[in-house]
Length: 251
Image (cartoon, rainbow, N blue to C red; front, side, top):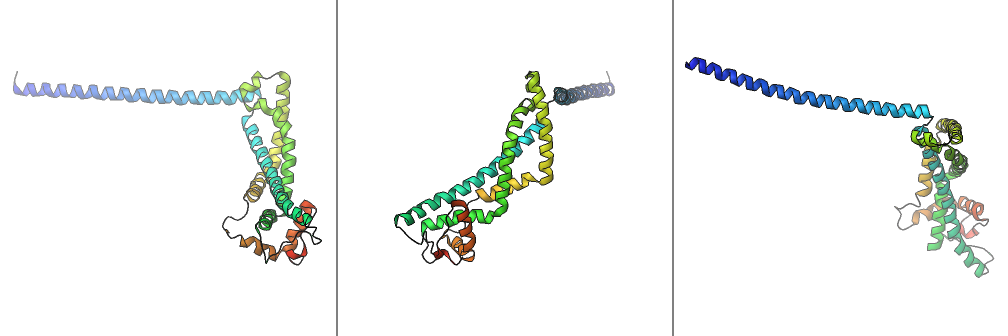
C-alpha cells in the first residue's frame, strides 16, 4: 500500500469516527428533546385534566381560596380593633381604681406636668385608636359583619376547594357547595368594587402597629395629648363611660 493510499485510509477512518460521534451526539440530544417534550406534554395534559375535572365536578379552588383570604383579612381587622379597645380599658382600670380608693372627687387626673408610667400607657393606647381614626372603627365593624357572614358560606363551599373533595361529597353537599360558590363570587365582586381588602389591611396595620417605637422617652404622646386633650377625653368616655379630669388639659 502506498503512502498516499495509507493517508487516505486514515482520513476515511477519522471521518467515520467523527460521523459516529456526531450521530451519537444527535441521538442524545434527540432523546433529551423527546424526553423534555414528553414531559411538557404530560404536564400540559395533567394540568388541563385537573382544570377539566374541576369544571366538570363544579369545584372552583381559586374562588374558595380568595374568599378565605378575604374572610381572614376581615377577621384580623375586627380582632385588631377589639384588642386596641381592650388595651385602653386595661390601662384605664388601675387609674380609676386608684381614684376610687382615694375617694377623689375629681376622678382620674392626668397631669402633663407630672407624667407617670400608668398614665403614659393609657395615652399611648388611646393614641393608637385616635391615629387610626373613626374610619378604622367602621372598617372593623364591616370586617366583623363580613367575617360572620362568610363563615357558614365557606363551610358549605368546602367541598368545592378541589375536584377530589367535590366528587367524594354527597349529592346534597355538592348542591350546597355550588350554591355557596355563587354567593362567594358575588361577595368577592362586591369586595373588589369597594376595595375592602385594601381597607382591611391598612386598618389592621394601623391598629396592630402599637405606639411609636421611635420615641423611647414617650414624650410625643404627651405632646399630642396637649394638642388635643378633648379628643382623648371623648374617646376614653366613649370606650369606658368615664372621662379624664380637667387636669388633663382644657376640654
